[in-house]
Length: 385
Ligand SMILES: *Cc1c(COP(=O)(O)O)cnc(C)c1O
Image (cartoon, rainbow, N blue to C red):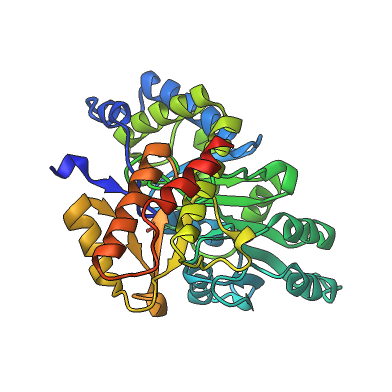
């Protein structure tokens, strides 16, 4: 019954059958008119999804490849950058900045706690020489289920005037509004296996005009990731190198599905499902990692394992008994928290099923304080709106 696996992890996420079938088409030449038409259509679709007039490049990579592209194209060795770190993915940005020889200052908050805008403000306002070249942020911190409020930080960067705003939107684009142009974001990266309803393999990078200007001055080495090459070919309807043609067929199908639903409904669906899940979790007496709870993301929810419950047992029980996959914590947070992904191809049924299975698994493993059905009742209340 492998095809009944309910994938409730924060990526890869479930892929609808119509999208899987579109990926099964025979490959075509990536230098043909047919491809160019397909590529132009998905590029327009990506602009719509990113709510931007900017270029959105499609890279053959996972999300981390898109992150690396975002760094090497606009910065130079020794550049001073501020990096927001409050979880695994912020840490990844900072490690990457170090790896490329940038002068990286980590602006830290504890795991589970959103960025403090004042910390960025203090640094930006005491930089009259404009030495800060970029602010590097993670919108949704997937390791803790925290949605960072990046808009006020982006506004500060605009006032600063020099710092580019580079954002990891991997678990936000397609699930949560990311108003690239309105907020003044310069680079937004994402990946196909999160809210796009696609398998892993494509990275996306939206690049502002200002960032393209920085590409001309950037001195970090790059070749495969070059935005300037991507920009040159995008205007002709092509990619510099052989793209994952079949995943781009899938992307066409995914964007059509999203457009049929409409952006507002799509965001609304994610908000309601997250509220329902989070309410059900709390009804079980469990605690969200996000502090305050209002910072809990609409795309992924992280929860502390209750006292006396072994994390591995719980997750294996959910797989064995119900064929539902949830994720463990990462790094030092392994066996301390679990994470449930609810982005992309998810509906109310998935949330109700997951809560019911979680409630009964906890109960079977000896967790006491459960009034049977309480999580379902709480979730249904939220779903009523
Ligand atoms: C999944 C994810 C990534 C990308 O990871 P890959 O394994 O390279 O696709 C980056 N940032 C965040 C916040 C993520 O959730």
